[in-house]
Length: 375
Ligand code: FES
Ligand SMILES: [Fe+2]
Image 1 (cartoon, rainbow, N blue to C red):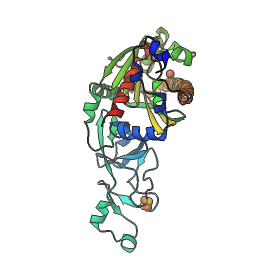
Image 2: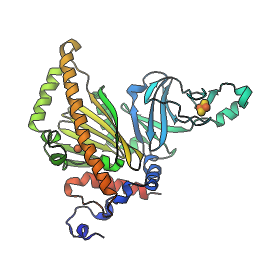
Image 3: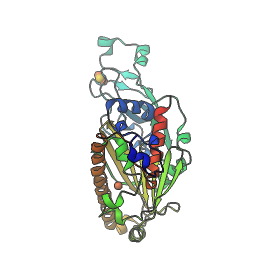
Image 4: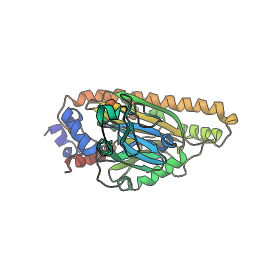
């Protein structure tokens, strides 16, 4: 073992830290997809996009394309891959329309069965039983508040069990933060774990975000845990707390009575939720696209304003543009260090040195290592 690691006074033993070689390589990526991403309930989107009959969303869960669709009020999840010659069915992240394959036009019903096959009698001669055998693979889907989750493995604990006490947090956030003011997907050249870790501590804030986040929070990070998940709370700086007070008042923004500071949750494995002053919610997933790449999917929400549009309209637009720009700037700064870290991780063997200010990273590593070791 590396002497440097052995001799230091660490809070976390190196054998509980994810080894650097686990941040790259196709074999790791495949094993992680099987043991972590297929077995966990994965956040895929919001019921906001699934309100009407035939509304759908799509998501990629570590290489498996999934569609979630409203069938006459019933939410169902299927493999988004046509059983004819394997085109993806829905190509957009969300929309409205029956599951119809864009390639040859097979139409799938609410049971995932291809009930409409152009030229069936002439070319295929499939009877009802044969069509049923060509049904799309169905996945588990569950909802907490407005958060929609899918689990690829057919068996396992329910969503409420996986979320524990944080289920009630999702309920609370869902009631409050109803207006999506920004959304985007940013491709990062970093393993998803290296990307996510940049959100689990505030130790990096001074060096990584000197002009932005540094002035936004006080750097005391009070951490707590719920199963595999974690929470970090930091006080906002006096300046940002005052700014949010003014803005919330002027715009008539509702504020949480439970979340007062900068509250950050990790719902294992890759859903991160940050709430500023109880008035702004950022929801981020770090979706693995390969061993060396992830998609950072972000969404920003505020509550519904109590002021009529005519009063707060222009001011509200300006504030929304301001916070959306601030968020994107910070993400760009995090991308820079996550990508730099990913390059570094490929060149070393010894586990990273985690200080006491990085305890949420250690907890994430423990949860990940336990999942990877489980049968
Ligand atoms: S691949 Fe889907 S209809 Fe042919
Ligand atoms: Fe950061």
